[in-house]
Image (cartoon, rainbow, N blue to C red; front, side):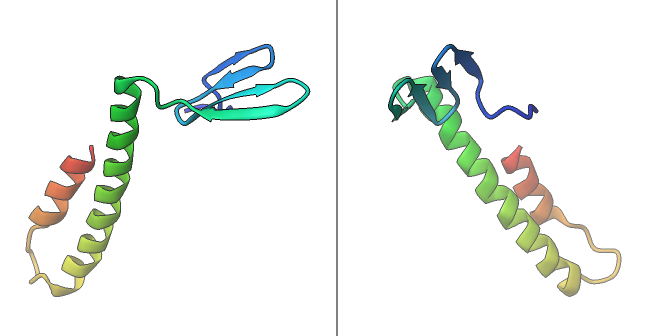
Length: 83
């Protein structure tokens, strides 16, 4: 993790996972979805967030409905999918 939001900074050009920007006299940004691997990384990040939120919701549901000593198998499966 980094405090900077850009991966690559070169003069007036910055690039990260979502967009490429140039900051000369006019600040201009383009999406950086030109490579197939970059699109797959973006898709996996979004799926991971979705599975994490579902896992948290299922955890709270199971927390109040499971019998004492029960196992959180469904929540664990969604956590594995998020990973």
